[in-house]
Length: 381
Image 1 (cartoon, rainbow, N blue to C red):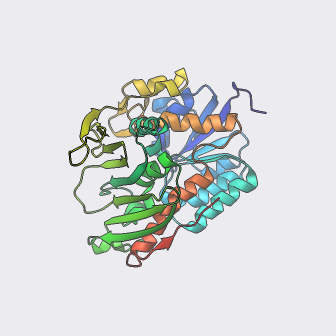
Image 2 (cartoon, rainbow, N blue to C red):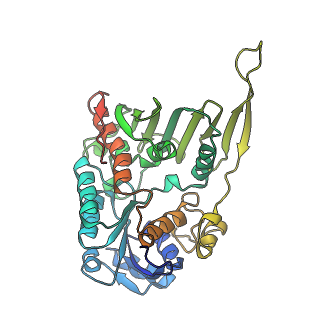
């Protein structure tokens, strides 16, 4: 039996430099009773709490886990902490949402999946790339069969990490590749089963020291588990000149869709019927601006999609309205996490799905460090 639809959950958001983008959305959700905020930076914690009216404040995750006043925790903490903290949240009897990536080792992925299974609580990886306006548009096309047979998939994520926190320095690009990998796997319901990946370029010595990763760019070719599909993914983090971009390209027998630049529309290609006597099929190109989808959200969250964000000029993540955050994905993520708990069903990006998406990148880096040899990607089913 489902929890009553009007049930109120009590949520804590841990980490405010990006988590500040989510706390107001939780606060606005009709199934939330109250929201606590947590950050080890005391000054940031109180500045944010005062500015946006959050009274419940913590400097330590441990205090939240020891409390019986919270049902769920959303971790927006540094990447090296995701594996350990996710297990701790679940073992403390609380539902867990966590920003990407799920973890950076296969062992940590297995530990989270095991903790979720043993506790029966919810785990959801908060992958923004599968709730953007652009992906939701592609997903509707796929469900209507407009692509025809999918023949090939491509994703890329370009980013420059200069002046980011120290734990980012030298991070293997494929350890943080879910923004590029997940749209490809999510669209087709596929799992990547094996990978060959090549590292490219040369990094400064100081960037190599922390993780032993010599590559600013890594490019992988994944074999998927259905329809003889493969997918190509490129990821860069350092010393490569390119504006920020999370992109996906879908190539089908009847239509294809490309997204190459962050602030530019999609390009949709459709074929005419084959014409006798001509070489090749004619292709029409259409520029498509993907619509926002407030219809998928409760009315209380609609303004987070349809309104312009009210930004803190000192920290763009810390805004009251997050309609511009990762192309409208934030309210959808919050809603799916909360409703999955209320409805007693798995969230779309549950522990097994998250582990499969994340393991693909971890194994890709392993391949790159072994000269591109084939690596079998484990399944977490």
